[in-house]
Length: 397
Image 1 (cartoon, rainbow, N blue to C red):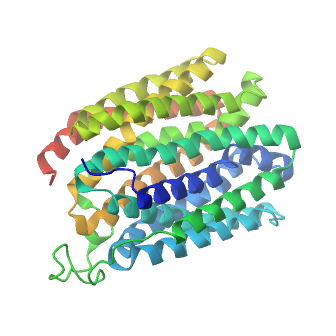
Image 2 (image 1 turned 30 degrees about the vertical axis):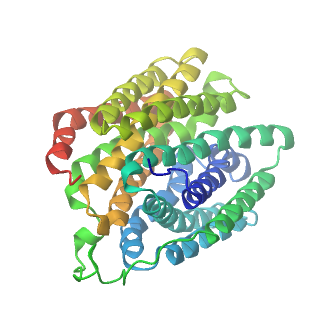
Image 3 (image 1 turned 30 degrees about the horizontal axis):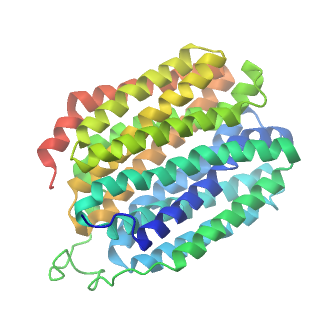
């Protein structure tokens, strides 16, 4: 059996962990930071925090095109370098407007880097273990996303300093950039103008920016990520203001992480056996239950229990959906497939932050979390009614 954990895959995995860790270590604290430092309304907070999602959404389709058309390591390093550099701006942003501009700008390299890094990781995987490798690669996302908020909350409790949190983001992102600079990738034959066989020029068309064939799966992902956008953004301020939980947000993300790791490890074995739709089905159902628990039970049991259940669901679902996107596209459009997945994810997250903030401002955080469950349910219905069979009918491998 070909080796899965080769040196380049480990580097791409580690750099991706650093990317998500650096971004997420401060994310749950930002609503508190904005509230304490600038005093915006909940609507304004939602608009400021969603700025990055908008630019990430706009950039990601072009990211896939550039990753497929130019040397991937060069594209990756340029994007990752800008991503790391912009963390320094959080240390000097002195007004709500400057913070909004910075946060919005940060979405562009964030969106491009996630596409480039995941495409490179898939490139260095042996084809016989690609689906399994995608599953394990997703652990780097999940671990960074789950561990970082816990670390950030603990450090803030010890230091009461937002600047230290921003500095940690800057340092960890810089480490990720250095790791990626040591990648050794095989040179592709004239990538800007050839297809898989290196002979046929690829026309520049809409399908070079978005995997149009994957629209049902993309819509499902957007509906699922809406739920995650609401929950992950407003969890800390909701716990503090409505549940009276001031030190337990770190435990929430720890339980989320445990659920993600558990399901990723189990799910990777299923992906290795080709059980892509089965994994996606399990994840969709489990996540739906988790968001229902979170919306319906406004107490510590619902708060912590939902974290673990949602983690289990997302850990099964996301790598299965990424495998579906990759299997719907020819290898010459691997970057496009990844960018379509992440574009859909960012669109949902951005809408979740904006609409969740509006619902919290005019109704309650509870109402915001009910919109998350409704969106998740709509995604589940679409998946079972159409998207699952669409993938089976159109997959290339």
